[in-house]
Length: 320
Picture 1 (tube, rainbow, N blue to C red):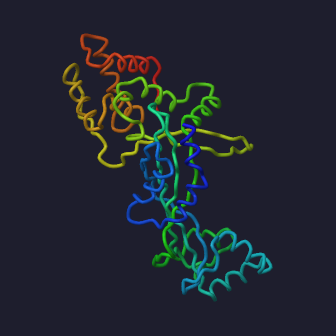
Picture 2: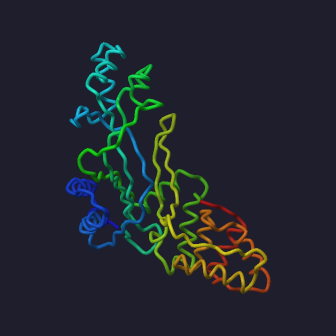
């Protein structure tokens, strides 16, 4: 574990990102990260949804005026004597264009041990800057600086890109250490910690690697009173081709066992249906209750370790 933390230094990842131009896939970046930590396997575990944020300012010819729209607008407003109309006239005269940053967050996982929580999560943003709108709509001018910066009804234009896409290192998280912090901050066992514990003692944990199907995504932010809030989320990494659970209404015994086994084969590991149920991914809690009725009666098709987990869940249900 120590070697992984030492090799994956934030500055090294930052330098790596600066030297690469994103292509159609991210294999080159993956290879560079693997070279930084050759003792441990690295994989691109998850790609987040697309997001956007305010960008900068360019003129009608594509020349850069400012890299940060908010900073430029606030500074220019002061330079205009806090006269909004003067700023509006300037933007219209120069035909200034506002840009936006679009991107996705790439989640790379570095497996450093055998247990579910033994991995480091590296978050890298893949972004590009594109034209978004005319900075001011002459037919619908802004009424205040806030609307100037981010209008409700923007004058959108045909989008075009500025320069190359780029990678930007965001952060890395030693998940094992982070979950220890979660345990210190939450008096009750956190649901994500229960998920991890159940995975480690299940047949899934004996046959599969957590980061092949799930990641633990950390959250850190400052509360309204300045307090530091930490939390964690379980994310399933398969957006497409999720396992499908067949209709099991009225099924029990061998028939129900066969349905769950087919789900597990599609997922790629045993007892997968239970963890998908915890996340609410296509498997309802009715399935667990049906299996529990079976194993409480004449049927026994779960390994003892999985049966124990199911009984614990029935006694004290949770979800993630």
